[in-house]
Image 1 (tube, rainbow, N blue to C red):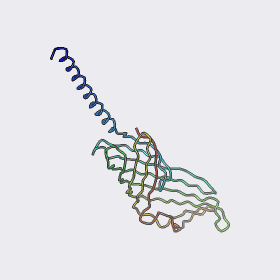
Image 2: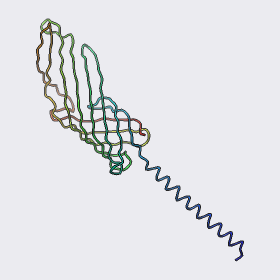
Image 3: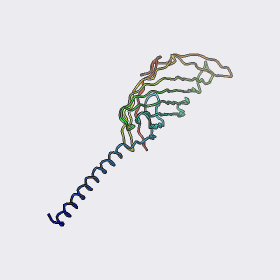
Length: 209
């Protein structure tokens, strides 16, 4: 075998080895990119009992990216037909994802607080006009199952139950002609709400970074 053939074969081997190494290196890079975590999620949730509000979640680099603390908040004021409503809901807790990417199926444990203040104006009290106010507040420990999509724009679905001591009645403070008195009324049946807690169900969507 002459020197020219040896040089040709050696060159071919070097090129093949470089190509193979480049292929392996490219695969490693692609796999590394596929495992990148979008750790911050900001969006909206719509459902029960939060009605509609903001949501924020951050995936921590512990337990292989499975732990994600979250905070939800809702609130609005509404006036209609001589009724004023001041509503607020907040919840904080943590989601535990079943995979290592901060998305997919998860279980959730949190604490929620529901507060509503109602004012009834222009009421008739035996011929006199007046108003009545009441508060409807309760806290729950929330256990949920959920599913969250991946990508820069995510979609989320949650369902669960909030365990708490829900009032069976509400107390009103009525004022008419300078006279103030209190009275109590039973809460009418509300689907999904009982004295032991409330059903939770919501959908959410937003952006992940």
